[in-house]
Image (tube, rainbow, N blue to C red; front, side, top):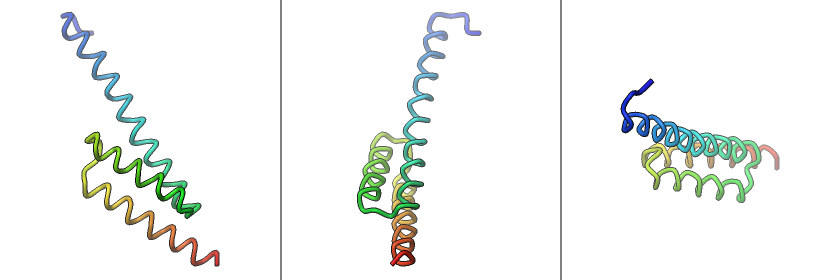
Length: 84
């Protein structure tokens, strides 16, 4: 355990940041899974918003955001074609 007051504060800050980061990433993954399975335009736009938000907050890189959007859009289109 940390002894100095600043170290204790640092541990608390790190825990908060970690929690926030995990929430952002896990919601992005959950939204991607929904969009992949359903293939609705509503789900895709929600995924795009989440990916852009995570990108703006610096949680993922630009290439990763684009890669996620591309893969999910491709899978959603494939699901729509097979359903029709």
